[in-house]
Length: 67
Image (cartoon, rainbow, N blue to C red; front, top):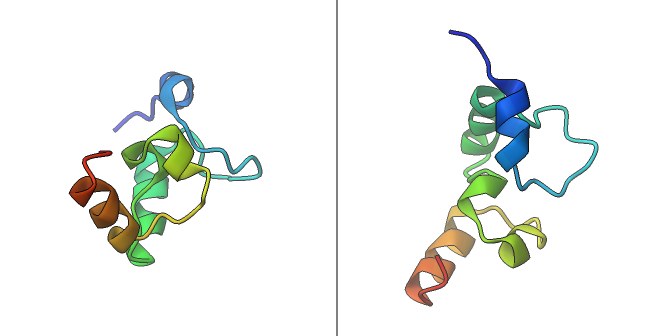
């Protein structure tokens, strides 16, 4: 499978600048799921900037109608 890193970077909203996984979605998903988290792209911009990528945070946002 070919990675489309350049295209992925255009829509990646991860605000963690030293992230080595930016634009490499398969690595990003693997990393976050192992930590019981979701990647930045699952969160609205303001929620993403909290760096709380937990399943629980996502569930709170869904229950509030934010996501």
